[in-house]
Length: 540
Image (cartoon, rainbow, N blue to C red):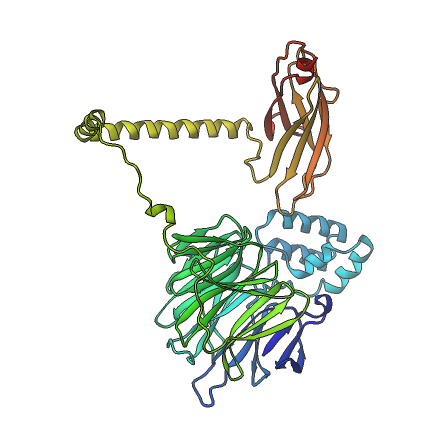
């Protein structure tokens, strides 16, 4: 058994070979391992499988547990603006501080990421920049991507011991298929996002189908001759695992649920889990023709499902972080698990064991078999049925006309809300903000809390103002206009103020909250706060 060990704190990654519970050999790795796979490179005897280990931008191939070949991803072309800046620094035409400002502007606006050299330079203190520039200004700019996921694809035969190709997913949103002998790129496919999980079926030379779960929460399906995705499955949450069981794609999501999809994106079923899903893998018992999904949960359970049916639950002393089922030694059906605390658990399935469906609901619910008490047909029902049969075309046209009018009015209202910034969520990608208001109190004094959040991934927002518009005859706000501090992405910032109700008749009104940018008259977003009645006055 081969294990990729991250080491203490992820600082000393190693490749360990175990025989039973004992470690036989250890090999240091230059970077953290991202994926591992076994595959056959050639048809010659003896047919010994090779081990492929993806780490950083390279794939290390081991044969007979010894280093055999190293494949490196092709370098990407650098950003022309970044290259020009370093050429100017080489000729001493710009100082390090100007270089830093220009690189930061490129990082914010350019679609291509900066090179590792520029990113390291931006992390330095001002006193260290000049020495770094003098050391690296003569070296050429290199932009290298890394491998995020890896799997294998049969080349021309579907046999278990057939030659397989390596399929790599990279950080620059590409899929690469490698030749198993020459390690050249046989095919290259593009994706809208970075792939994190891969699942393939078929043969490369005949026909294959590839499913890639990406960081944007979508699953893309590609065919043999397609350079771009053919189908797209949109998930409501981020995927945590992707397994193919026969012709069904089983996806685990961060909403603690398993979903079954066809290869064209049609959802078949959903099963809710009792805890968060940490890892998934395939359980395949060849002797009985069984294929099932194993899901390791955060509560220390390993659940085995065949479609929606729960077959078995394994309880472990710690949460399981990885699963592997297959041949180990002389046993064909062995389950190997690693735990969050660094433990290793090996379980052997009995040869006489039979999985029985126990905890899942299969088929229609019992309520579907109950007979309904259907009332008798009245004269009014018969007349209405005859009228619909005679004037069905006209009724359908009237319904379609009303439906189109409803869609048109909804689109106009949505456009008006976007143009006037009436939505509590910003519609522009330049100012990704979200506003939520909460009113507390019985009156006559209310506490108004505005929750403002920056929804971008890495860009802070500065220079915002908050203004409250209200009826001065009904309310009094001691603080109706104030500045907003720097909004760090992902954090919720509460802004508090008090509202004094001046009416003694229990009349309530709306307070408009506007979020503005300094120097701009048009608001970025707004919210209408429906103030409650003065309950304190009613109690008096």
